[in-house]
Length: 315
Image: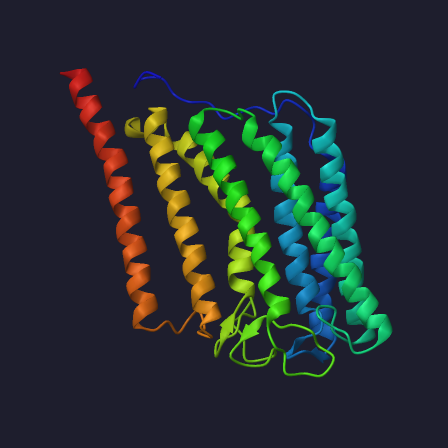
């Protein structure tokens, strides 16, 4: 690509996957209803307001579903396997949300709850849907990784975003391995304290102990973050000449992906050490500083190489 030419956003080659979009719309409605629930229902489950978990899961499913539907639509050729795997994700997600909301209505936990035979059955079903959702995402991810979905920067943002998302989904398996300290509860998301410790606003992540929900959430949403960054670079390229060469944007995406993966590893390590996100120790801060320096160096190299080539081209 010449320095003077401007890149274009990849175009959809198929309609958006309707079941995913319907699922996203249903979860958007659930967000509104769950927020209303938090305002009128003063019950507390596992230390959080009863409707907090359905709200978070609904927001996450909206982001996940819309992003996946858009990525699937970029495939040069339609894939029946990909369509059906996305439908499987919707079915698994619906089952999971029905159980979560149903348990809130009953006034009890959904995750790790083995206190009664009925609760245990629901948790086994939820655990199965989580595995199915991961495997279906893996199949879709492999298909998307093999397909060119725009220029190299867009394609690699999607490939690397999916890879990191799969890691983030897999990190959810760390939670059932934690000791809850509560009879009948077979797992926990808090490390170093029981679930229900004071939490951060909006996210609810623990402010006094490690919280495995942080790497799980951060990792699985690489699917949105990295392609959005690539799209932003494409949008800015006509206005910033240094971003026009695809090699520059590709270098920035690779740097951002490496930084994202490094931060995911850091917050996972931090949580497993029982350390809250907002109270890092010196070791964590040192590791974070190394990541920042690495990202700055990567960005500098990508931009400097473009500037040098531009200088030579105009000489």
